[in-house]
Image (cartoon, rainbow, N blue to C red; front, side, top):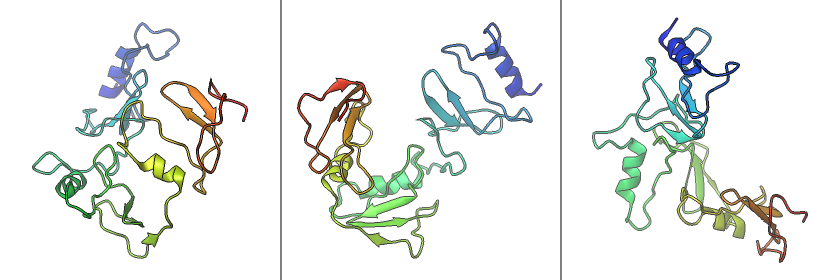
Length: 198
């Protein structure tokens, strides 16, 4: 048995029907018995990238699935190139601050002053991808304002055309309500736990 298979068998020992024991990490192995690039701890909802020995790659642990094929290398400061460039531009009025994902890699789409463009894994603009967009709608302005990853923060849900979804829900509380799709103003007496009939 491989190291991954051995650790998986040990984690499953004592569980019923081969199901993942609650609260215990269960390694994921590929068909050859090697560690899968992405490992997840189901009971806490976090995943991370691992090397071929199953060791967690620092800075890749995120809620959801990380991008392990493009895990950025940290610089001497411990920050990735994207994080370092973002930090250096902080406080400089009008300066471009790159968008970084949870692992510190460049987001595939960057934006600045109404322009959007695609970048490669090193953050370099891909020729021919720059577009200028119209003024943001009420919904997109509201959903992009404030700290992006603040726990418990409500973020309005928008349709592709920039209008508000008719039903808005706050995932942290489980409450939903109806809104005017243009203004986002809440329709009175529609707040309920679960999905209301708008």
